[in-house]
Amino acid sequence: MLEKLPEFIKEIGGSKTLIVTDEGIRAAGHADRTLSILEKANCEALVFDGVQENPTNHCISNCRDFAREAGVDFLIGLGGGSSMDTAKGCNFLLTNGGEMKDYHGYGKATRPMLPFIAVPTTSGTGSECQSYALVSDDETHVKMACGDAKALAQVALLDPELTASQPKLVASLTGLDALAHAVETAVCIPRNPISNIHSLEAFRLLARSIHSVITGTALPEDRSNMLLGAALAGLAIENSMLGAAHACANPLTAFFDVTHGHAVSLMLPHVIRFNRLDPEVDEIYRSYESFIPSSGAEKIDMADWLDTLKETAGLKSLSEMGIGVADVKRLATGASQQWTGRFNPRPVGLPDFEAIYSNAISDVVGSV
Image (cartoon, rainbow, N blue to C red; front, side):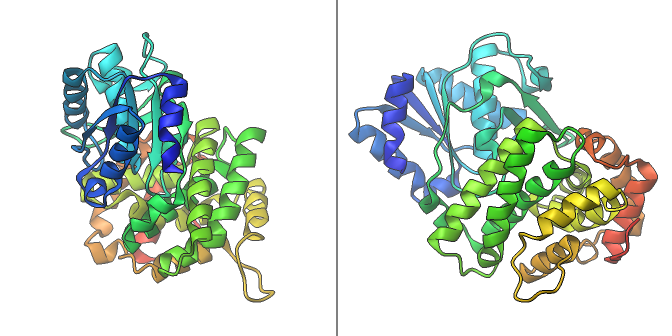
């Protein structure tokens, strides 16, 4: 599948390509393999491997400077969400100037952008199918969503073989993040017939294979399910939005450096229990629960199932990471300022966020 890259570049039109990736992806051999494929097809290309996790404006500016010096006219994002975000961010700055904060929001790029192909090596963010770049502020580490239709990849190339090199923990966290995308887009306020199609199919594929990923027994079919499921969940986000679980996760990342997929996994079950008090939302959850694999005829509760998945993955709880009751107010205040929270199907204010965090810290199962 990766061998098709030169065909797409020639079809879209590009004379000098920049592969945007990180050192880990290069160490795994994916960047050099991609470079070799392009060079054999007489497609001039070079590699920027300075992508950082949760890229900041500084990281993206470095990529822009590299791209400008090289005189590239085509971009490839190779890796996880950070590589995609850096490639998109570079595209904003290279073609439209300024800093990433100038594009916080949507549709603020006034000039055309370079063609872009997304090649994910993880099954998680779904960034390959989204027009947003998520960029962390250099000082506060608060994430800015910078979106524009011109930033959307012309091609999302999904090659399951590229995901086989993921460490089990990375595969687990990115897979759980993708699952959260499917669940949150299914019930968010802007959900619609288009996003619903993507959310449901994403959940069906991800639910079928997530346990195999977490236990390290994933087969090629599982990797294919996860990669396509993550991409479809990304399309669901692109056509709708997320909710309170992501609003809760971002402060955990900003204040305590909890990996995004880890943070979302800890918060999602408690947000589901909160949302289930809305009968319409509960009905949606029930319809999705029918796609959760089961060895018997017993009813499966989605929140309980997600709790089991994170326990099987061996994820540390908030309390095990030293996050306690004294941190609730700060976390809840941060969550209440996240834009994704306003799309949650049940209104969620500061007291609600405090209760959700308190339940997560004490690992209380009851709804709030």
